[in-house]
Image 1 (tube, rainbow, N blue to C red):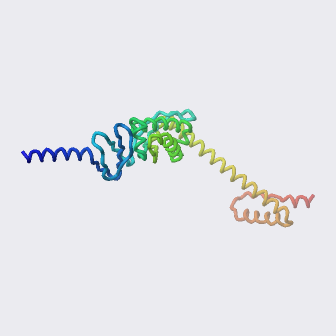
Image 2: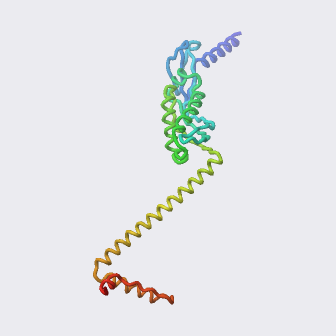
Image 3: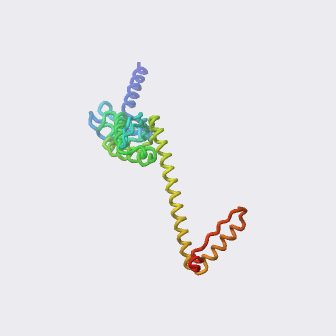
Length: 245
């Protein structure tokens, strides 16, 4: 009879310890409520609770990820695209994530979708394709400002895929080809302009010197003499013509 009583008391004591003692890992925090009222955040390590009076909810502080599904977005230049992303965040204020929002994971996911559409819709397609890092930063800052009241810190937003309709891909290809042709023509025109400037400069120097034109004429004759053509046209310098007439 004495042994049975001891065993019963031992079981009661173990149950009491189970309700009283909690061990929190380094990445965990415990949000404690006393008779339903928030009374503090505890951990890591050993946490002692008053049975029945106090309850505790564990919160994981490690970085979490949310896969934002593809969102239909109309860019500023009226092009329809589908964009999906990944959001990396962590809980930094456990009491806010428990007391200010019912389900912070779902709330953050829904907010990420609306923020993605809102931010990207303000930019043109070229910016979406060429400035992903800049847009990701803008989304992160906007999302982080809104989730602060939930005790959540958004650490990074990565745009994964930007899907464009096949017809639009072909149009972009034609546009890129036209842009390359335009740049090639500009470069060619700049080269001709520079060559013309050099010719004008050379002409001024030849005419400024008394014998410059004759020397250039003799050099041209030497080049003609080295050529094997049968017909030779000899240009007459204007200076010689002026002296003759």
